[in-house]
Image (cartoon, rainbow, N blue to C red):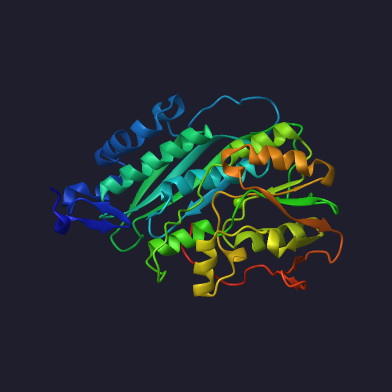
Amino acid sequence: MEDEQEKVVIHGLVCPRPLTHYETVLLGHGSGGKMTRDLIEGTFYPPFENPALMRGDDAAVVAQPEPGRLAISTDSHIVSPLFFPGGDIGHLAVCGTVNDLAMVGARPLWITASFILEEGLPLVILEHVTASMKEAAGEAGVDIIAGDTKVAERGKADGMFISTTGVGWVPSDRAVSGANAQPGDVVLLSGPIGDHGIAVLAARGELAFETALESDIAPLNDLVEKMFDSCSSIHVLRDPTRGGLATALNEIACQSGVAIQLDEEKIPVRPSVAAACELLGFDPLYVANEGKLVAMVPAEDAETILQAMRSAPYGEEACRIGEVEAEPSGKVLMRTAIGGTRVVDMLSGEMLPRIC
Ligand code: MG
């Protein structure tokens, strides 16, 4: 029988017992010497195994898949706690980069990962995170081909930070950009908003009630492929992460010089997210997502693309939420449930720190 008293929760992960010094990250793991080599061979090579990585050179050498354009994106992850309902920093690091590549119509191919580890971090946490990265990379069909590890002294990094860079290939018939929204386009959303932000808050114990809500964290490249298979005319794709849907749409309205008109009643929000937002005084439009996308597509193709989204596992709840208009340029407007119209601004300041 397990001894409940022995259990410790570290960075959101339940460890069966307190850990000894030798079960944690030590400064020597970042020395570049034997301990670094042991960490690479013991903890990073087994889950990430692929020829480019295992060659062990200073840079991974890969063959260019096809002639054409490459997309490159980079991201850093500082979420707290490291583990939350539905995922952890490892899923976040891979999915965040995969999704940023997919949002320009790229097929993600390769990821590099740089780890800043805090001295004293339990090695079991690192092992869970690399297993999550393997799982997410496997689902997305990408290889983690290069990496780096540095160790910061105790108290100088909060457990673990991960920076990732991704490379993807963009098929020649795709022209997706936040600058391509056209008046008359329909705005599509892949599912309910706010799940990630509220799930992380719940993991911090900042909600006054229990919730079974999980982060929506997911790789969206398969959803995007299904959308392009149905129709290549997609103008804009964006994943509304930090700053939420409102901020993503404001960015697009400014980039494209258009107005975006939303219908409040059509924007899906789970009851548990709505309840948490009500309690905390948040607007779900500003809460982070990690497995949702918003698309702007020609009106004549909207139904075809919407049906394609609904056929994908991460797009089953896709819906129309509004349309693009010419004026007022750079603004996002919302038709409210009671029949009025309000301006939806970009997020100003920081509502939820350390969310991704
Ligand atoms: Mg993004």
